[in-house]
Length: 513
Image (tube, rainbow, N blue to C red; front, top):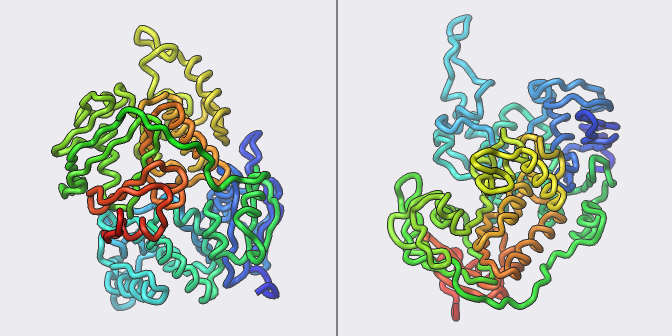
């Protein structure tokens, strides 16, 4: 493979946004049948570089070559015409349309008459083409299912199919595993291997170093917009890659003292909650979180975690049961009452729940405190206090890519997550509900967030951690609760093995649990 000429070359790519240099003379190349991983901290310039490649941004300087020829890519249509496809971190679908309709949208096969086209979608041809591609690469999608009715993992496969339908031979996967379950990640890795064997050239963007070492042939690291070098997978380790990413050694295992739990802060009793379809998602859950401890909720995604968190934080009213914080009953009384009781919530979906994307960082960071001095007085907002407070939090939590007046949508996903975490932790809650708090964060930021969660525990607060990452659960938790089909089915100490947790998470019985 190393003897093959590159199918893609980025030479000396620079992209500036005013005084901000997002990419600084970056070189990158890719060969057919290769997986080339792109690593970097949040805001390092990875997504910007790929946006230049896909025609979403024009480079300030530098050139792009495809098959050895200089090309100009002014739009995604230009990229698609050159055989470049991109699977974005946040999916772009029309939920009420079928998988087939979403895949062919913009490139629809149409029925033809004698000597002319009828301008009507040829559904059979579209469906057959989607099924053919699905079978060829083992993607296993139902062409007739509606997007709104399928899992996140299925939507990920549909995004890949959409690119393949448009004859992509260079495929950009931007954080493809960020929202997938462990099983879905395993399935995706198999799909990547089949694409690779078929000659597809793949750019794989991820913060998960283990995945990079599993799937990549080469790894290029960006730091603050500059390339730190390209290394082969052979000989690379998680520690060596982490050092390239953040410029220092990273501690992968959390260092913490033994917990000294106090009185109960959160008490959930026999809670029953239905989901958006009216189906029971939480079935009699009972749990307690005490002051000075981290209780982790582990389980396969879709087993009631989201609905349980929403009931605790006031987003969703339960059908029955009780939620108490410091003895005060907040059951079904809404988000404001939960907030007043001292509940903070790092939401798993930063776009839909965690942020108001058009708002500035100052406004987003003030959402939990805007009713109190110094952010407001006598019903009037103090914008200077908003800005001053935001500047301090932006610095303390290393939010990159903007200042107090920057709209939230302008930040990278990882930096948006840092804004959410900064706001919730700064509120000095009694109970911190952290739902997938490190999703989309780089290794250095994960280390920072883990240390902050430990600080919350050591300050006498209760922390409920909900995570799909078993290593994160076992590293941070003082107690581990396993949820399966809406029920708390087992409790483990943090020393529990991954096998023991896995058995409980899939409904099995662990001896001694």
